[in-house]
Length: 303
Image 1 (cartoon, rainbow, N blue to C red):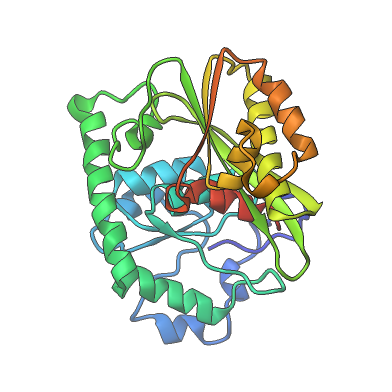
Image 2: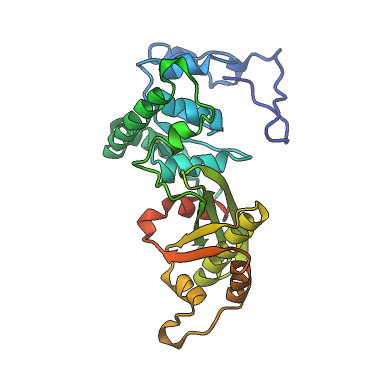
């Protein structure tokens, strides 16, 4: 553990090395837990710890190095992202690869003690935890094969996204895939959208999210499709694109199939204008169960 920082700048460490971090623990904590665990001031070597057979879980902010290392050693993750790309990484391991659990926050944005207890028990003792361990066994073996003969891969992320084809779909060459989704808060009626882009190998290219303010489900989904295509165009991905949405209504809007005499939504024309910028784009419906990673990203856009 480290002493807390008073800095308001995320990602910068301003904790003083002169401060004893143990003084910030509750009175009597070390005595009560001395037979149950180990508290180490300042830094510890993460890789040897993750490699140890007694480690049953990893509370992580989900930096990309930590994601790779947890998979490499087959350690399930409790995701606690804070800033930068950590939320996207957390969505990937939680909703995409399904090798992590993400504690829920209360209405004040805090994770309560009971939620922490529940997540730990679920990870260590529950059926979901056992399924996570099974998936990690596969990915751990894939990681070992990727670095066998002491040869490190040129692109370490393929340890997860190329070799783990049971969980990550591969597509044809020259093709990019966009998964989109929306989220709507029932209390405030505000909405958000989000999604992710992958290449033909299933490699994570980037993710995106946007808070849309007051909106309905259809509008939010259409904005998600628009933003996904715009991100792809801005990055130069204009060859063959597959856009996957779990909203049949939004897909039908773009394809011109109006159910029950519905009218064209204004954003639909903007989407069609973007479609003219690519050689080939396919907009298709997929079940919600196949779109959970985009769902997780979209929900984070509400916060």
